[in-house]
Image (cartoon, rainbow, N blue to C red):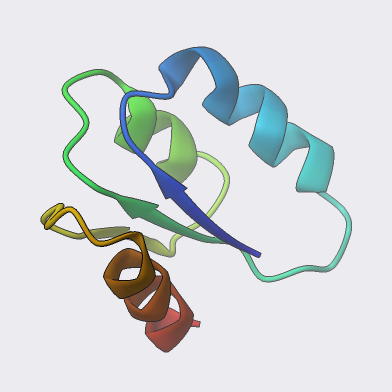
Length: 68
């Protein structure tokens, strides 16, 4: 599962918790959050990466997929 996020601290734990135990690989790509999004994601997976947002969702998606 590849998740691309920015400033999603209110939703990140609930999202990742719902995937816990599914056996799915979790990859989170943070596109410049200024909140606790990254820290929350790191509690669920070691695969948390930074990607500088460039106004191109497909570039962020391709980066996320390349990390899995």
